[in-house]
Amino acid sequence: MESKFYCIGDEDTVRGFRLAGVEGRAAAGAADTAAALDEAAARPDCGVIIISAAAAALARAKVTELRLRGARPLIAEI
Image (cartoon, rainbow, N blue to C red; front, side, top):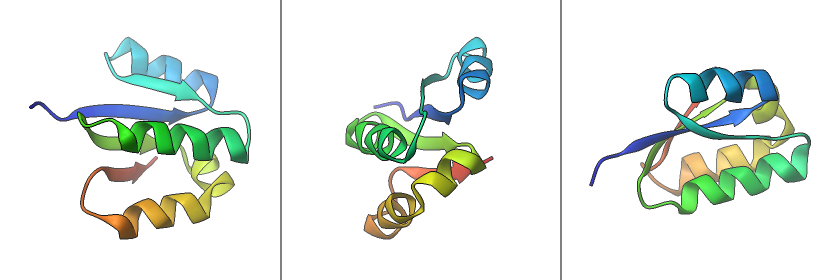
């Protein structure tokens, strides 16, 4: 199975990554960001979550939880 990228961030960031062929979800607040992280992590084909620094700051506890849970998906903050 091919590992895919998934982007979480503001509208402009997600739109830019979509132009490069990366799926994503714009997140507007802490709860929305945490839900987007859960959704992406639950996808069996998701190998890397690209998350903006601002979005990661909104859901720092969830980002840390996912990083400690396992090697997949890799979370890259931009």
